[in-house]
Length: 588
Image (cartoon, rainbow, N blue to C red; front, side, top):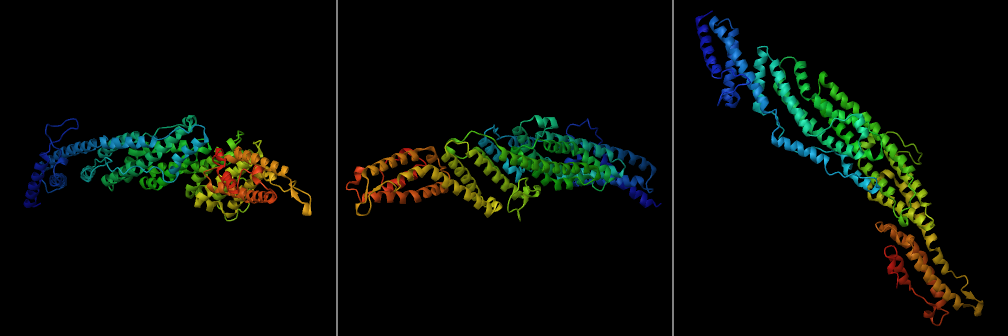
């Protein structure tokens, strides 16, 4: 061994010693006034300290070092180890507590997810409005904000922790870093998770909850799940890998990461799993779709975050929930179909207007159409009822058609409740007209229904229009008949003045009665096309008959005004047009 080498090592040792002794060992429960951590100094000084530790460690193992230096080196390594352990814990402790900005963000996310909901009660119209509040969940879900203040470790902190872990690993003591890191980050993750407001629910809890309460919790969950998986868990994974990747046993280090997030991840997924056990009621479709969409959307992220064998149980848990939600969605759709077909309310709507069931079902179908991409993947079997022209149609399209045809059957049954047949025809006309209108308003729904069924519904509506016209206006047309007006024949043929007077008087009274009946004054004004179609149908028969009637007796009457003719042709047209909205404006 050469003297020069010994002297060189001694000089290097003493230089490194001065650096290490410049930062005395500090116990975790003691801080000197004004003492600065190595981390708080500039990067050059930080690297200088780590180089000194490496040099002392290397020289201590070298044979080219005097024995006195070797024993002193062991003491220096112990001093540096204590110092680095203290700083490792101190840095993590700084980030273990959630800063006010992050706390406010998590709290606001929880509040925004759970607010803005009103109980729909039992009214069908209110249920439709409540359904629309959550319809968007099935399409895109709640996607968390653009908050970037997640208290992740900075690049400098990660570099420093990584450097400490490397030194601890090189001297065979990595377990301290693993345990401190696990405890600190687990504490932070669980605090963040609690702030998001996701509750632990049992199956019995789900059964006891009213649906609107569970729906609020689902809405909150969709936002919290994205926040947890794509921000909280993903960033924890990224930080963990940057600090520990490639150091020691991969299994040991991965177990540390899994331990930091597993409780939160399991609780998060447990909610979705428990919610999938809810009863398949029709009002739950869009909320459950939102839950399914959010979870399926997050599954690739979960696969990326939890890749190891020790964390596969989390991915398997998530993947296992999806089939349960699929079956629930199918059950809900089946429940809805049965509900539409067998809804038994027997109270007729006032004056044959659109039934709440019709509005609810069509709004529900519009919601289904908006979710058609995801529902087309889930609905793979045909409806239980038989339909014509099934060829080339998807199962979802067949289900929508079946629901509409079931609604038609139900409405036709309800139309028989009315004692006045004209009101029954008006009821069918208004309700089928509403269905046709909703179909025509949506190009997607119109395409899914197809021309054949659209034409069929239009034919049913037209048939109802004609039946309504006959049942309501035939007695008006009866007053305008030729039969009984004439007497004699040939050159002696004439018109009975008495009969004409009676007919005109009878026509005036009957016409005004018809215009004032509910079946005439309660056409659906929102469906302008239907109103015009009905008016046109009436006028096409009424005006020619009235003109012919007036022409018959005017040719034989010396003073037509004596026959009590109250309406001109234009007056008649106007009276028919306004009768749907304002029966009081009939007087010419």
